[in-house]
Amino acid sequence: MARSKVSNAHCREFLRYFALDLTAKQITQATKLNRNTVNRLCRITRERIADECEKITPLRGTIEVDESYFGPRRVRGKRGRGASGKTIVFGLLKRNGQVYTKIIPNVTRAILTRIIKAKVRSGSTIHSDGWGGYDGLVDLGYRKHYRVNHGNNEFVRGRSHINGIENFWGLAKVRLAKFRGIHKQTFYLHLKECEFRFNYRRDDLYAKLLTLFKQRQVLE
Image (cartoon, rainbow, N blue to C red):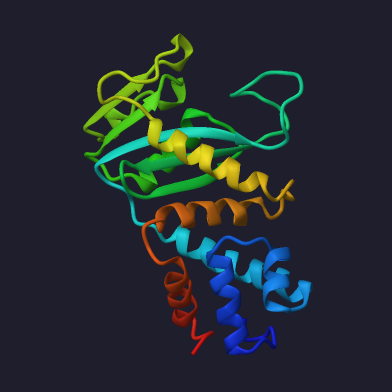
């Protein structure tokens, strides 16, 4: 932002509208800034947000894990795992807390367990669906592992469910749909923005963004 040749006042105005989740077109109309400048500020802000999201400390407690598939609406072919032309995203959510997402190449046990070990503290309780990629989590030091079998139309069994992370997937997809198509190269930044907005949904997002940029000594 310091190199964008935009005044401190305009940067703050931009962040205020960004916090309200306006599109680049709407921000351009509201601030009277050049559209290319707004696009550049949006990219810078999303990069800063992504950096902050990657700093999340390992989650602990009751954790829901799941994968979701993002991309063009399916016309024909296989749904869910194995669907072609989709970007696979793995997510972990602490119940009533934060979510962490990561783009993955496939849903093998090796990839899923590696992320879980890195982002979930041992001793936590994990909830998942019945996918075989989640086998063996108790052997890795997790206290309990509960499953629901979506294949048999089982979505809740007592306190065992993954409704929290599935709710996040729904919110993220609805929000991303307003962009009417996101380039694969920038999908990561938009995904992390969805994660950031969810994690700070109870906070003043404008104040949080100001803090992020003050930490980089970009804004006074």
